[in-house]
Length: 341
Image (cartoon, rainbow, N blue to C red; front, top):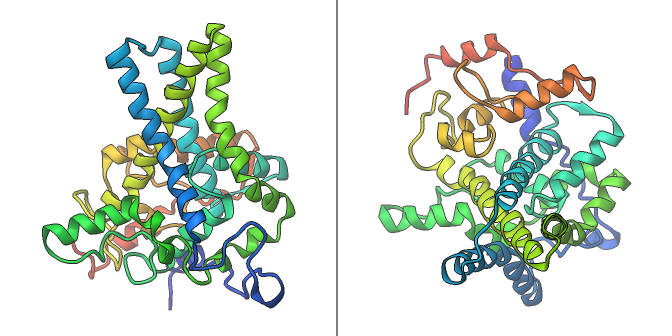
C-alpha cells in the first residue's frame, strides 16, 4: 500500500490525461502546431527567437569591450531585478504553481502568475507546463523530453546527452512537440483566461525585452540608455536566467551533486544551482516530493521561492500550501533500499 508521500508524488506526476483538448477530428488547439511536427518555418522562427538572448549578450560585450559602451549602475540593477523576476516566473509561477499545483490562489493572483511565467522567455504557458509534467512522468527514461541520460556512453555520448538536456531538445520536434503532449495540460486548456494568455505568448516575449529598454531610456532620458536597458536588462538577463534554468535539466540530472533520495531518475541536489535558480537546484528533493511547495528539506538549504510562497500564505494571497512533511521525508531517508550516490 502506498504511503501518503508516494501517493502525492503520483498525483503531481500524473495530471489529467483524458482525451486531448483538441478540435474537430483531433486537430490541435488554436495556435499550436500538430503534435510531433514543426514546419521548416516554425523551426526557423523557433531558432531565431531562441538566439535573440545569445546574440544580444554578444552584442553587449562587444559594445562594452570594443566601443566603451559600458553598463551603468542602473543597467546592472535592472539586470539583477529582472533576473530575479525571470527566475520566479519560471520557478514560482510555471513550475510550483501551474505544473505541480503546490498551492492555491485567487483568480487575480493566478492571472498575475500566468503573466509572470509568460514573461520568463521559457515558451508558451501551457506548453511549458505540459512538457514539464511529461518530464516527471518519464523522468530520465524514454519519453522524457529533455533527459541528458540517453545520449550514449563515453565522453562523447555524455556530452551529447547533456547538450540535448540543456538546449538541444528545443530543436528536436520529437522532444519539443511529442505526440499527445497537450493532454498533460488539460486542466489549463479549460480555463479561457489562461488560454488567452497562452496564445498571446509573442506579446509577452516582446514585452519582456522592451520593458527594460523603456525603463532604461526613461531613466537616462536617451536612446543610449534604452539600448543599454534592452541589452543588459533584456538580452543578457534572459541569457543568464534561461541557462540557469536549463542547467537544472542538464547538470541537475547528470553531473556532481548529491542524491539523498535515489530513484529511477538521476536528479541531484546542487547548492550552487539552488542559489542561481532560487531553490530549483535542490532537484533531487523536488523529484522525490514534487507535490511540496518548498525544496528546503534541511535547515541549511536555501529556497527563496519556497520562502516567498510561505510569505504569500501568511499574507493571505495563497492557501492550501503543500509544505514538506518531516515524517514523510525521514521515512524516505530511512528506507533500507536507499543508497548514497
